[in-house]
Length: 439
Image (spheres, one colour):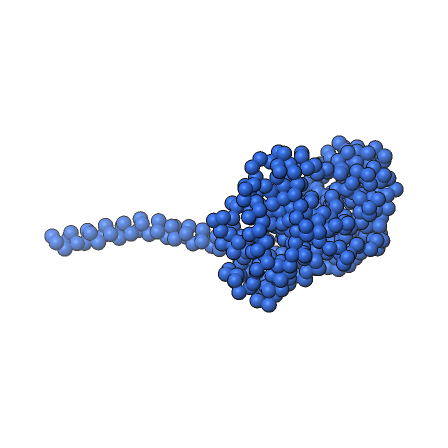
C-alpha cells in the first residue's frame, strides 16, 4: 500500500512539473527578452553620434543619426552679427533677422508661412543680435529637397520699402529705467560699463537714430558683404547622405558669394572697464536692491574658458559653492557670457536695502582674496563637467549650442591654470557693479 501511494505521488509530481515547466521557461524567456531590449536601448542611448567634419566649400559639422526622421540645420555666418553694426547703422543685423524668410519669392507673408508649413519646415529661427548671424530650421526627411530649395531661395529675396518699414517697427528694443524688468536694466547698464564706447556695450538691437536712417541699399550691402561661403559653418544633424548635403550646398552656392567682404572687427585693446559703482533709481522696487557684478576677461583660450566654468561652479554653485553661506541671498545666481572677443562672469542678486552695502562689500572682499588653496571642491566640479561631457548629446536640436562644450578640455585643468583664472577674477580693474533700488 505504501509503495502504491509513493508511486502515485511521483506520478503527480511529474504531471505538475509538465504543467509548470512551460510557464517557468516562458517567464525566463520574457525576462531575458526584456533585459536584452533594455541592453540594446541603453547601448543606443550611450552610443556617441557619428561626427563628420568637412571643409569644402564651407566648414560643415555633421552628426549622423540614421533613425531620425527630422533633419536639423544651423547656418552660422561667422562675425556677421553685431560686429558689423557701425555707429551710423547700428541695428542693421537685427533688421535683417526680421526680414529674412518673412516673404519668399513672390509670395506674401501669409502665403510664405503656409508654404513653409506644407513643406514640413519647423523651428525656423534667425538671430542677428550676437557676434555671429544664426539661421536654424528643421525639415522632415522625406521633403528635404523641396524644402531646402524653397527656403534657401529666401536668401535672394529683394525686399521692398514696406518690408523694411515693417521690420523697423520691432527695433530697437528699448530698455527703460522705469518700465523694463530690473534684470534687463541692470544687464544693459552693466555692459555699458564693461565695454564703454564699444559695440559690446551697446544695445544689440540697435539705436533709434541709426535704424531710422537704414535703407534698402544698406540691407542689401550687409547681406552681400557678410553672408558668404567662406564665413559659413553648417551644422547638419539627423539622417545624413552625401546627396542631401550636396542639395543644400548647391542651393547655398546659387545665392551666396564665395568670399565675404567684412569690415575689420573693432578690438578691445584700448577699451577699459568703467569700474565705478553705479546706482539706478527705480520707483517700482520696494525694500530691495538688485545687485549685478560683471567681471570681464578678454581673449581667453579654450583651456581658460573650461577652467572658468569649473572655478565659477566651485565658487558659486547653489549647493556647496565657497561663497554660499547662511547670509548669502537665496536668489543669488551666476552666469557666464562667452563671446568672440571677451567673456564675462556675471553675479546677480536681490537683497534687502538695509543689507545692500554690506553684501557688496562682502562680495568684493571675497573676490579680492581668492586663492586656489582655499577652494574646497575644485576636483568635484571638474569631475562634474567631465561626466557631463561623457553623456554626449541626447537631442539633435542641441548640437549647435553643445558642440563647443563637448570639445572643452576640462580634464586638463590643474592648479596653475586655476590660479591664473582666479588672478583675473581678483583684479578690481576688470570688475564693475551696478545697483538698482528705489533710493
